[in-house]
Amino acid sequence: MGGNLITYEPGTTVVLELYPEAYQIFLQASWLDYFRRLPDLNTQQVLEFACNLTEGFSVVQGIQIPVTEEVIAQVSGLPANGTRWFSRKHLILNAQQDFLQPGEQVEPKGRGVALQSLPQPWPKVAEFVKQYLTCEGRY
Image (cartoon, rainbow, N blue to C red; front, top):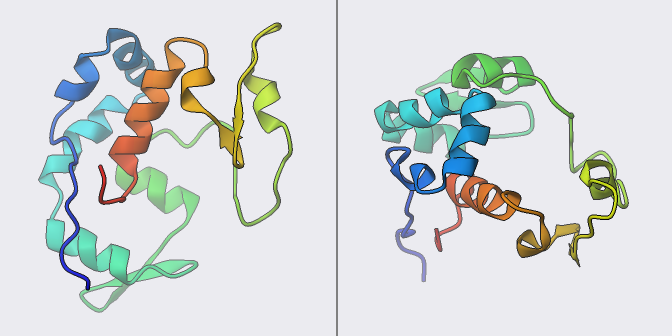
């Protein structure tokens, strides 16, 4: 039992560039610089950070690093704007309705929606985000 996880994390934006509409969305949201910086990260430090992550901080080589929205924005370079969402606070029922155009429908799935039921180009964008940012072995 156990062993190394087999993961696939794109080292470049090549996968994203296959989907021009999704590429434009990430370009406008200022995420491409973040994606391009990922291959330069120190893998051992990232792993140590992930393994030692607690509710409000992590420890890397004996240094305690706070994990706050401000620190995440500073380190990642990602914009710290948009809707704030914390799964531990409370579940907002039907929150996805706030993001739909009149007449659009999505298929509920668990606490979210089935990606393929989203209007174009969002299924590919959502799939890319899920594959790129999750740590599940199947990706």
